[in-house]
Amino acid sequence: MKIFIPPIKESWIIDRVNRDWKKYNKGLSTLLVNNADILWINAPWMWEKIAKKYLERKKVVCSIYHFEEKDLNYEGLRKFNFRDQYIDSYHTISDITKSQLSKLTKKPIHSFPFWINQDFWYEIPNKSDMRKKYGFSENDYIIGSFQRDTEGSDLVSPKLIKGPDRFLEIVANLYSKNKDLKVLLAGKRRQYLIRGLQSKNIPFKYFEMVSNTQLNHFYNILNLYIVTSRIEGGPQAIAECGITKTPIISTNVGMATKILAKESIFNMSNYLNAKPNVEVAFKNSEKLIIPHGMDPFIKMFKSL
Image (cartoon, rainbow, N blue to C red; front, side, top):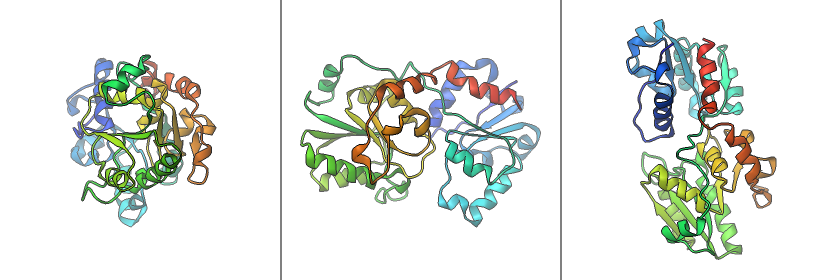
């Protein structure tokens, strides 16, 4: 059994997934589509870059992470149905997405999160030195957000499925009660939150391009990570917070219910009552570390 994954090179979580898979499953991987038994399209749009003859001859697994409104309109469904004829099996991270997908296809659907690479994501005991390294004090109450929040088309419009407007509302409320609060932003397309935080005079630090090592440092110095998404496939930050023992609360999206305790999941009417449960999140995330975090994927491929 040989598996081919189309490369995407977009500095996205899937690039990391692809690197991990090829590193730890060399015997199951091939860089040549012609040599593959199975095509794993884990960036759903990449099927258009694969020759039709391979889609017809090979077994094809497609990962679907979430559905937006545009995916369910006439044109979106037309594209889905056209692709569906080539798909043998689907993979989702979220049971929410699995439920939506089951209404659109009769193909088998497997639902489980991506694995966690423990070489990158782990708890660092000495957090005081790490805070000093990045210009924070012991008294700072640091809230983190490492997801993009602006549409790529104009770098002005908020990416509403990620909920940056919700994040700003929550942080502004918390800052009114705690002036030691500071926001730590990382990653590209953070312009919406940067402008919003500036307009409300909420102190923040922004690091655009960071390595996995730095990002692990950032998780470890946080007092709280907040996921405010309206629609989400993952986000992988939920599992990364879990394994690094970073306090986290989240809306009910993606893998949240698979990793977090009930009291850590909120909506916009009760977010002040949400409470991080580090131990539950760590216990559930620990199940996803390599190699056993990859076992469900191997089982899925063998079932084709």
